[in-house]
Length: 387
Image (cartoon, rainbow, N blue to C red; front, side, top):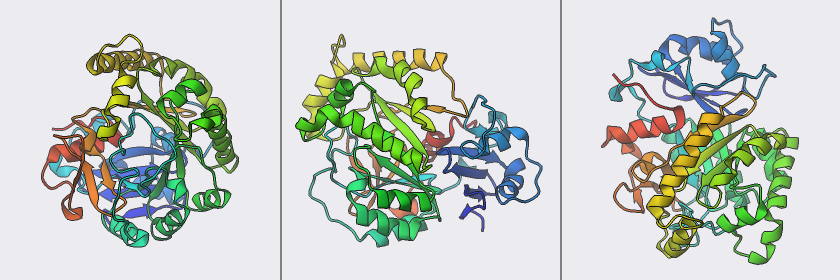
């Protein structure tokens, strides 16, 4: 059925739209791809192990993480190329989310100085029935759902209940700080073709703990070793692992080191974000201290330096099939491109005006502002060429 998510025989998830084409999520690489109308049917046939006429370029990208393809450069998350989408306009973008980020937990063992969920973590809130919320999420028709928080792995039963509704019906991504590991949950994630995304800002324990300190400061000396050990455990189970890095003044010079060393851990890819102002007012002082680390005298100056370092880095490194690299240019004006579900079960997004989360109705997520829809799709698929 059109617009419904299909899990194909290859395990790849596809959502089709007759005006737009198809959107693909691969649990083997954690990557999202757009497929133009011209190749939509053949893409489905290929993923269902049926006869097809797909170009090699599309086949190679769909096989990232599945087959041992000869390494090649991933030029764009658009397939086969940007020109194939020059027909797209706002009205032809599908009206359902690509990804929904579910803050399934409102507690965390870390106290990150830039946490975008700081206005939710450890704050009093109503806690909704997990299975009921999962059903509402399913009805909003996302291609993939991110179990996030806080730290979702602190909520074992919630993950079990959520997967009982969503598992193998949509793509599943687990956002974790990497500090916890549960063997039984790992088996369940494997069964449901989940991707694990670990937040890691430096491979130097002192720097990583400066940005992302444990609430129990006494254990900070062993944090990085624990995280790396857990990444290795996921990879031994053949669960794909992605790394998330938020660039701040403390770790802006660590990008080259991360690029050199992360592939040795066997991770599938790396996503880089620039830091944005946190919503939690209580963290304002810590955030300002973080942003004025080093030579920067103000937050604005620090942001300019961060963008400069990311630009220098991006010009020297490419995204490859054996190690995908994606730079997400987060800004305060575009942060509401993310669709959230709060621990209370209410849908929300980031307010464009204030540093806070704004509740939205599930039946009108993209109804008011086409620009929100455009930003949401560009966040996961790259720049869209409109008419």
